[in-house]
Image 1 (spheres, one colour):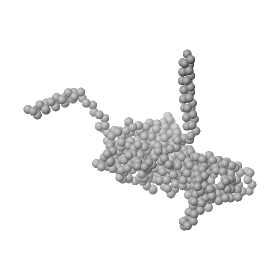
Image 2: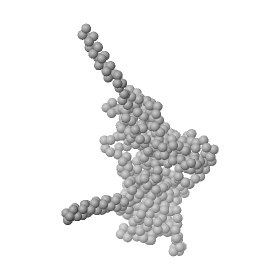
Image 3: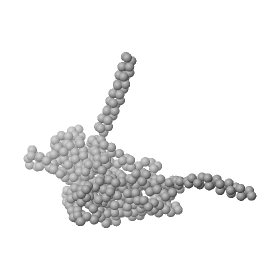
Image 4: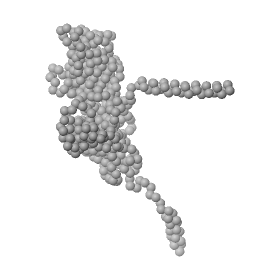
Amino acid sequence: MESSSLHSTSGLMSKLSGTIVLLLFLLSCSSFPSAAYDALDPNGNITIKWDVISWTPDGYVAVVTMFNFQQYRHIQSPGWTLGWTWAKKEVIWSMMGSQTTEQGDCSRYKGNTPHCCKKDPTVVDLLPGTPYNQQIANCCKGGVLNSWVQDPANAASSFQVSVGAAGTSNKTVRLPKNFTLKAPGPGYTCGPAKIVRSTKFVSADKRRTTQALMTWNVTCTYSQFLAQKTPTCCVSLSSFYNDTIVRCPTCTCGCQNNATDTGGCVQADSPHLAQVVAGSGKSSSNTPLVQCTSHMCPIRVHWHVKLNYKEYWRVKITITNFNYRMNYTQWNLVVQHPNFDNLTQLFSFNYKSLTPYAGLNDTAMLWGVKFYNDFLSEAGPYGNVQSELLFQKDQSTFTFEKGWAFPRRIYFNGDNCVMPPPDAYPWLPNASPQPILPGLVTFVPIVASTLLFLAFV
């Protein structure tokens, strides 16, 4: 009796200890920020650098620069929004190249009034065409920040800020905290500011080098799960060897409401369509208004295996915009397929190989040719771009069987597109084994024995 009670007590303690370990694990996981790791761009981030370039009687002047080190993810109009919380009671006396959205309560200041007195200011970029006396280098792009691969010359944005009621030396300055970056919505998570080695500046004639009095960095990473609740694009597939067109999965990005004209989508033949298109440019909402489809995605990427040659094979890619509220400027596509190590020719798209891992060349970044097809228009007859890719076959790996000719992964503007399930891919007509007729089992030995008999006659 005593041994059985001890046995049950030890079993209970074992279960409790297992439960406690599980709870501690869940608590530790919940303390981490949402996952922001991109397997195709593992080192991609936006780095915000603060360079203190001079001290003032009550603070400092700093140049703030945002570097987009992401290979293919960019920030498009209406642009970035940067926020933080001051560590003390700092104010912003003036800014160049940007402005805060609110001034806040500056009633305690007599005479000169600061630009912003909020504890948590929100900063936006100035628009193109800003007067030159309000500009600095790399400013005034309307918040647009292009990707590092596609347009490195426009992958940085800067502004200058004069901070008051702050420290006036390296020992008394307190770093801002709680940085936020919107592009323009959620998606980015920023870490704490960290003091780094002071930035060095080389003069135009390269004969003199100066350095910042103090520098700190803030690193922000992107998570698609934080950016939107539903996917933003999907992939459909087809091939020359199969009549089946594998469409985007139903309800990939949402489902249609009963009232299609007012429930978040519009029928392409709706009489309400003209009014929607006319008013979509005036809408300030970032919520897409899409054409009613079974998948309800703003963007669809179609991969068609078009032709097969002796030593080559050809693919046609079509990107279709179903969003009536969005024109995609500087769009890009990232495709993962093992045959990109033998891409022979590309028509009407720009191309760059992405090699996030040494020795593995299976990922390509594609984007439009400037002034030709780098602008993806809103939903409608002109809301698509297309190109063809010619691959050289590697006889040791090439096959049309088991869906090998279709991409493993596709990103549009940095967001992972939903692929159809693998069992729905177009298969070769002879991919399935043919059934053997029962009579054939007995017929074949009879014919073989007859032929053998005649051979000896």
